Image (cartoon, rainbow, N blue to C red; front, side, top):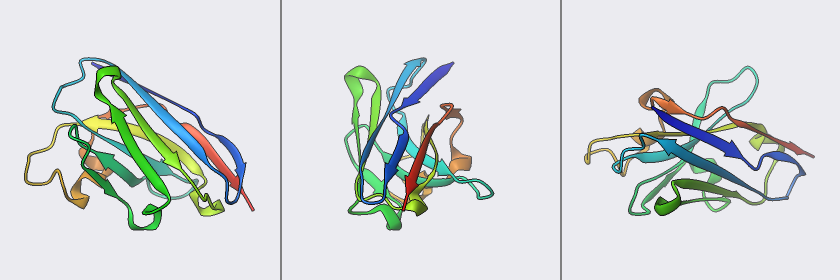
Length: 129
């Protein structure tokens, strides 16, 4: 069983920054790819960023240049640095982890929420205008 715990959410004004963290524990497979997802009220959960063990990243187009994800494999910790936030970024943010075949690990496939089995409980991000 895998446990993922997010932290770092909060309320900021537009243009501000937040750094989210996700600490993993339990049976975390060394092959796991990790991702960040968000869900706003009334909307479907969407993938924001994903990162492989070697640091290769995939981002949702709307966050490219503003969000940066990184991971510390030794600490089983995932990070999401979010800069120049806008009200449209307001949502519950979740981290997730799972295995993927090599053929898709560099593609937008890893931003599909349905492909992940292990999820954290989420941390709320609210951006005011």
